[in-house]
Amino acid sequence: MSPLLDIDDLHVSFRAGPPWRKRDVPVVRGVSLRVAPGEIVGLIGESGSGKSTIARAVVGLAPVSAGRITLGDDMARRSRARHVQMIFQDPVASLDPKMTVGAQIAEPLAIHGIVPARERRRRVMTLLGRVGLPESAYDRMPHMFSGGQRARIGIARALAVEPQLLIADEATAALDISVQAQILNLLMDLRDDLGLSLLFITHDLAVVRVLCDRGIVLQGGRIVEEGAPETLLEAPRHPYTRALFAAHI
Ligand code: ADP
Ligand code: MG
Image (cartoon, rainbow, N blue to C red; front, side):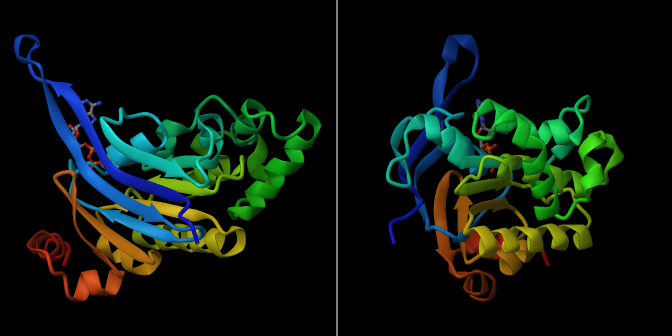
């Protein structure tokens, strides 16, 4: 099966330093990875290792210095905005505090013009059910919900446009462990029911073991190891992977 996401030798650099000595600082240094349809891939690495930059490059928010990012059968740039959705750690920051949950989930439907206005409410109700929220959430404001529920709202909003790939950037990092487990279950259900592919960015190895088909370990903008989560956890080959895992026990 051809990959849904194919990142080939990606390099990303940022201009940094004082004005009199600006230089290009490489942040992603030759990363190649693939995500197959319906696959859940974990991207693991310490803070600053370049995980978010890779995610941002996929959705066109970080500059690609070299390399290639291909989506599906090379989705047009325009459809990329729809078929790849991102969810973040802090759904409070990504949700508009002044907009009802219903309006918030319906917004991407309007932006992408994929559901006629009169059918949007119905679609949002379906999405609420899909992520395990009651229909009564529709008219409420985001602050009335717990962290886990806000994560569900963020997922419903991301799902509204029926993406093929969801990139979760530390999306469950701020949640209590039991709430986090519920969200991971939801993500696995979405994969099973919708065939959704997931690139799950995390520094938490326990999560990778529960959720991911495959893990990729990033250090300093390079992939140092990848494989089945159990293999990474039980027999890490690279010293960095070992150190990373030891730090989490
Ligand atoms: P991670 O998500 O793994 O914590 P990031 O991809 O956010 O890492 O960041 C990797 C490195 O790139 C960090 O050193 C960060 O400071 C730097 N960086 C990220 N975005 C920018 C930017 N827009 N301009 C300059 N440097 C950046
Ligand atoms: Mg990050």
